[in-house]
Length: 256
Image (cartoon, rainbow, N blue to C red; front, side):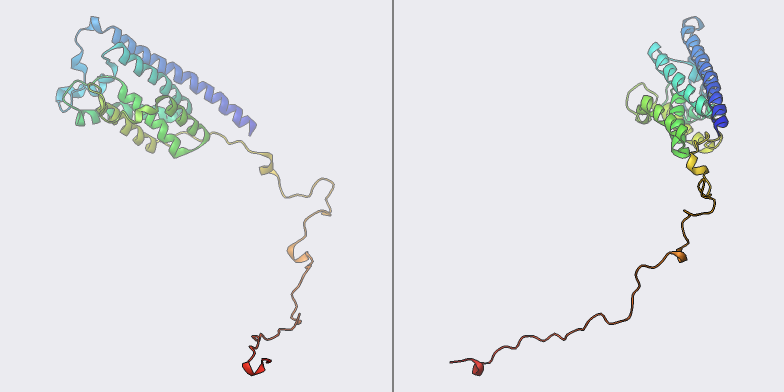
């Protein structure tokens, strides 16, 4: 069992390094696209425009675009933290869920979004947070619960941003990412095996005589061998007297 835990720890460290590098590479790509914007010209044709056939291209390209440095930095930080966390704890589920988060969040936004230009990776970040949260609720092993608590500690406020709150913020993208994250959690909650559980010594003990007690001198007797200290008998234990109310004196019994 100890060797299994050591191998699992080595595997987790490897998953962490790969997930961190992949998250950093994607954040660097978003930064390159954002900073190259002035030289690339008008990129609004790559934005997602709901219910417009030409806007369908945005399902693929809109997460790469950001309107300001603050917008890019907020999404990049969330992607770095949540992406690394997901890839470390759920490496198999992450590979399967990421395409669904990307495409389904965009498709939902295209169907329900306001007639405007929707850009940014916020749908992906919300999908990651809801995926981690619901994987913790569904799996309920130690690693899953810890990952869900970390995600909620950093980005629990995303639970409220799926509703319209601020003008100019695509809550539709947030809602689409949340729906995609919940769906992915149900689909691939068993894609990754549970981590090995620590087994205590008392779980491995067998019902054997203690050392030096091979003859069973101190072994517990069987129930039928235990002497009975008290038995109920049918012998009478006393006499029951009838109850008679006290006699009230009559007037002719009173003395003058």
